[in-house]
Image 1: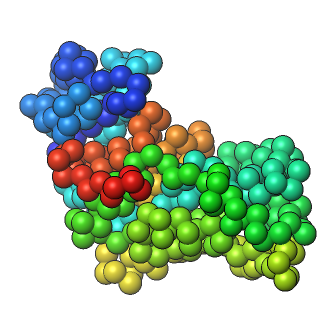
Image 2: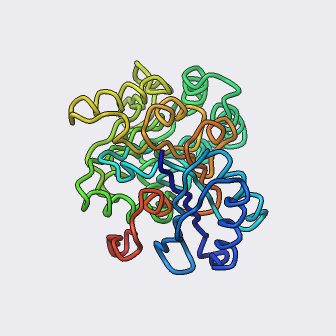
Length: 303
């Protein structure tokens, strides 16, 4: 089966040198992988090397040359690269923050909640009971705090606007699916132009949070179900989907999707993802699909 090795540099850290790309091709050739001509998707930023052979061996050859350089590499099938569905986690994926940690900081219990969040995202404890425990600690917090955080602290992950706009321009459907909360997800989806969102609902009484989350909780299994239902509704196979997340509760949808990506992910997710983006931003997911830089749609200030 024909495959492609994609090399992506983090422009903010260092360019992608032609000499390094040539060295990767030579290392692949030494492994009997028959690399083809290099196709530059963006000068000094992203390049494809077509090859035949074992993808794991190609990736290992690339990483032996890359070393500690801020360059990502992924070995993927050459066919069907451009996906018709994008399904993305929100916290620490589409945005830079974990919303529940930000709420907890406002309630004066930030460190306690952040510790539980980190363990849940690493897969050390189950997501659903961890969420209930953290939400219970928010009892009595004014709802207005969430709205203020959206205005002052919550920031979009770099490249997200470009990823969404470019895929939508190419005919893809976009979905935000989060174990976080609708009060944040609705606004993030609006800012990014995402077609639909799914998240958990914090229960309210008057103008304060009750410390409860509406059941059933949207966790790992619900993310998989959302992906399956969306594929069925759109008449797509799983091979036509791109799923991206950062934590253990994203593993199910990342495994199911035709292209599953860990973005600066926890080890539990990075181990099973088709592509592990450690240095680049969300626009890297376009290069993984074979988009050239001149094909990117940059949505103004929201990019």
